[in-house]
Amino acid sequence: MPVKKKVKKDGPSHARLTPFARGAIAALALVAGWSATDIAEVVVKSDGSVPTIRAIIQATQLAEAGGGLKWDGLVSGSTGRPRETSDALDKAILKMVFKYRGRAVVTTKFIQNSLKEARGVSARTVRRRLGEAGLKWLRRRRKTFVPIQHHASRLEWAAWVLRRTTSTLKRWAYTDGTVFYLARCQSEMQDKARAALGPMVYRMADGRDGLYHDCIGPSAYWKAQGTPVRIWGLLLAGILFIHILPEGVAMNAQVYASLIEAKFGGWLKKAFGRKAKHGAFLVQDHEKALWKAAPKKAMKEQSMTLLEDYPKYSQDFNAIETAWREVRVRLDATAPTGTDLEKRMAFIIRLRAAVAWVNKNRRAYLLYLCHNQKERVRDCQLATPPGSRTKH
Image (cartoon, rainbow, N blue to C red; front, top):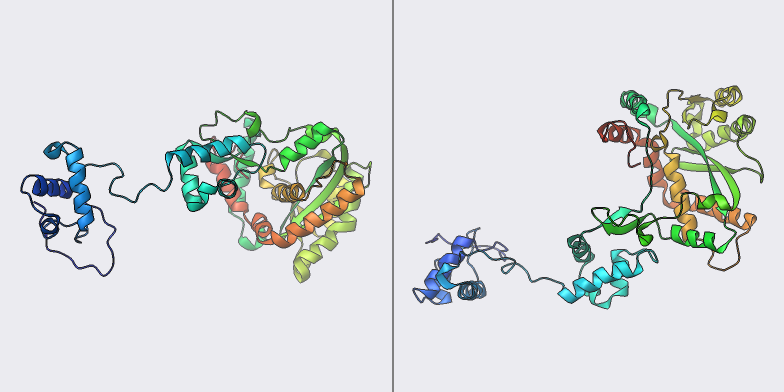
């Protein structure tokens, strides 16, 4: 019999009765005929504290329901706190996800705002119920990869980056261009609406519903159907600078060289202040026009050193790619809701406002993106297989 010296506790004890202790309670109550008060004098919980009269009565009732002395003292959830949600609420939460997925950003907050019964439980409980149903908060289906022949060069780059000092890495700058397209038809407006739902959705954890209509993001090529607005940017020291190319102008070696001469030096001074005289190390992707002689010459004149060993197929190492994503999210959040298609000048005004918003409200995150080079390359080393595309 589990008889121990009682230990006085300052506050309430949350320890549970062990199966052996519950078995002892059953024996004393059903065979010896002891009262709950008498049993409390000799039976203790796992931490040495005294069980409550209610706990002893519950254990006795469980023993009677479980076969009397044949009961092994094991219970499933009967001694813990009661389940916060009913079966009906669990089903309602799950139904809410599938009803609005693909039509709204279905988060736990959305579920609680939409489902009155769910407001009485915590957001953590709602997430737990979704997890029990096999759902996880996953990125909507996208396809990216790195050809296997480029894995070795990425791993060499990773090893080189890990040997750089923190002061050196803080002087890195990232440049790249992107294109936004003005929608021109109803189907493209629908894809804009789909993009506004964000990149994440509750999906089955095993991924089997990845191609369901409500789990797919906007088409990978829908944006190429409208009028392009071409942007070039530079990200350094946690600040995103942009230049909007004139309508009808595409990036080439001469345009890039002129842009570097006109903008990069000023951007460098705004970001680094007095330290701009030390220059910056420039990361850029491998479009042929960017690596011509004219742009390289302009970089040297603006105190920018091109990192020429930067590997191909490595957009995940170029932090400005993630910065563009932040701008797109902001643009989606501020997209006009009317039926009239947005004009170029109106979009440019909204674009500049989106960049200013990101620089102000996401400054800490942009700074983190500029300085997390070692985290990115370590993820590359740990990827499966090593050298393949990372989450960044």
